[in-house]
Length: 614
Image 1 (cartoon, rainbow, N blue to C red):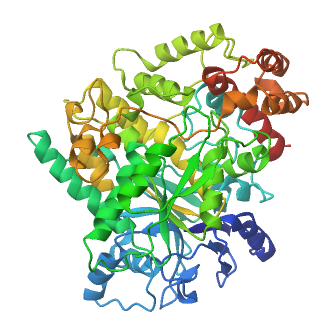
Image 2 (cartoon, rainbow, N blue to C red; image 1 turned 120 degrees about the vertical axis):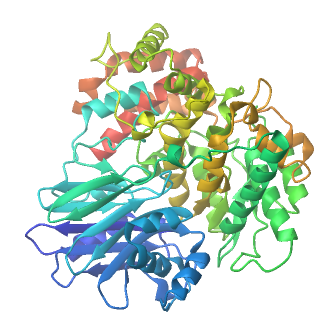
Image 3 (cartoon, rainbow, N blue to C red; image 1 turned 120 degrees about the horizontal axis):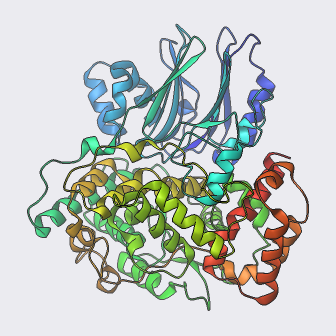
C-alpha cells in the first residue's frame, strides 16, 4: 500500500524536484520511504511512497524495474493471491528476486499482458511503462478500492493517488468544474462513480477501467463489468447458498490475512465487522499452514461514544470476547467538532454529507498502536441490502432514497431528480443559484448502463447500482483517504470479486426480507459469530455526533467560514441565504441528521474551494 504519482510527455525533461514534491504531498500514504525513477530519455518520471506490508525489504521498493530493464511498474494496493500467481509464473520459467507481490504483478503483465487483470484478486491502481516504446498501461481494480486520478494536456500527462498532488503541477487546469460541483451538492453520491472531479483538468480512472497512453493519446477501456461475471446457476435453497457463501467468505478472509506485519480490525459490534473478526478467529483456530498468514492478528480497535445513541460498546465487547481478542477502546464521545475539522477535511480531499472525524480518529489510533493493516466490513451493506433497515442518521435515509431512484424502473431518473429538487426546496435545503426549476444534469456512470439479469427485482437493481456506481464508490474513496492519512491499509473481505458476484447473482429472497438484511450471510455464519449480533436488526452508522456539534462550536465555525466570499462558490451557491439558514438552525439548536446531511455538503464545498481553488 502506498502513494503513487508520475509525470510524462511534453517537450521539457522531467523536473525531478517537482516529482519529489509530488511524493511529499503523498507521504502520509507511504511513511516507510520515498523513491523516484526517471526514464533514460527523461520523458517520464515516477515517484512512490511506500507502506511496507509484504516483503518489507528494500528489494521490493518501487518504482520496480524488470530484470531486462524493459518495464517499470508503480503500484498502489495488494494482490492477495500473489503466491498462487507466483507459482504459476515460476512454472513458466519466471525467476523471482523478491518475496513481494509487485514483482509478481509485473511478471504477470509481461506474461499475459492486460489479460492479467482478470487473474488478480486484490485491490490496485497501477502504471506500467514499456521503456522500449514509451507507452504506459494504467489499471484500477474491479470495484475502485484504490484510487487513480490523472490530468493531460496536449502531449503531457500526470497521474497520482490523490487530487492534492495533481494540484501542484503548473500546467494542470485546477479551476473548479462548476457543473460537477452543482451535481455533487444536489447528489453527494452521484460523482465518485464517474470520470469527473471538482477540477476542470483532473479526471478519475473509474473502477474496473484500464487505459493506455501512447504517442500523446490516452485510450480508456472498461475491462470489468460485474454483470458479465454473475453465476448463471444459483443454489436451489438457502442451505446450499449459505454453504457456498461461507466457503467464499472464509477464503476471502484467509487471503486478506496474508501480511508480513501485524493486522487487526476496526470493530463496531455490528454484523459486518463482527463477521470479519469471527472469520479471522475461525481461520486462525484451524491451525496450520496458511503461507504468509499473519500470526499477529488479535488487534480490535473500537470507537466508543459514551452517552450517545450510536454507541455500540457492549456489542463490540461481546464480539471481541467471542473472537478471543482484547479490544482497544477509544472514546470519541467527548470530541469537539472544531478540534479536527481542518485535518479531516484536508485528508478527505473531496465533499461528503458529514464530517468523518470518527473513522479518521480511529485509524489514527490504529497507527499509533503499531498496526498497519485492518480487515473491515465495507461492502456488505450495498451487497445485501443493509440500508433498507432503519438508522439514526441521515446517511441511511439518503442512501435509501438514492438507491430507490437508481433502481426503480417505473420512475425515470429525471422524474426522481425533480421530486428530490422539490423536497429539498420545501425543506429549505436547496441553495444553488442555477437549476432552480430543473435539477443539475447527471454525470455518466458506466455501471448504470449494464445489462442486468431479467430475474432481477427492483431491489436487486438498486443494490447493483449502489455497489458499482453510487454509494459504495463514495464510501471506498472516503475510507481510502481517512485510513491512508495515517498510513493504514484497509482490506475488505466482503469485496472479494468471487464473493461479490456470487451474492449479486442470488435472488432477492436470499439477500433481504422485511426484517433482516444479509440473509445468506447471517445463515452462513450461524455458530461462527455471537448469536445476538448475528440476528440483530439494529443498524448504526460509523458517524460523528454532527447534530450536537452543529448546535455548538461547529455551527459557529460554519458561519465564520461562510462569511468570506469565494468567486466560484458564490457563482453557484446563494451564500448569504445559506449562512442565514445555518445561523438560524444553530441559534435555535434545531440541527438534526436530516439538516446536517442536506447542508453539510455546502459547508464542505466552501472549505474545499477555499483550500484547493483559492
